[in-house]
Length: 146
Image (cartoon, rainbow, N blue to C red; front, side, top):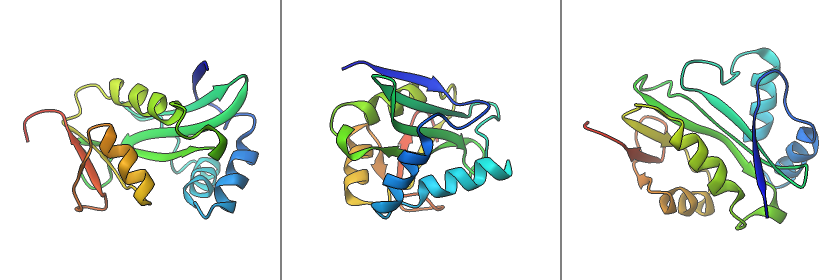
C-alpha cells in the first residue's frame, strides 16, 4: 500500500468532511476542533516548525495529523489533530504521518502529545514517546538535553 503525504497549506483536503464525520461518529472531537480552528484562522500550522499533513491512499483521504509549537512550552513541539480512518488503522498510515512530522521537527528539544485514548497512548509509546502527565500533555519524546 502506498501512502502519499501531502502538506495542507491553503485549504483542508478534499474528503475532509467525510473524515470529520467518521471521527465525530466515533466520539473523537479533535477533527471538529481542527475544522473550527482552521476556519477561524486560530491554528493554521504555519508557524516556523509547524505542519499539517494529509495521508492519502489511492487518492482517498485516510488520515491527517499535525505539529505545532506547544502553547505550554515554546521550546517544544506538540503533535496535534491526529486521526486515521478506522479502515486504515494498523496499516502504517498513522506511523507514516507521525514519523514524517517527527523527522521534520528540526531542533526541537522535545515533542509532546495528548493521547486521548488507551489505543492512542500505545501508538505514541510505540514511536518512542514516554508517559509524562504534565503541562496539558500525556506523553513526551525527548530529543536532546533537558
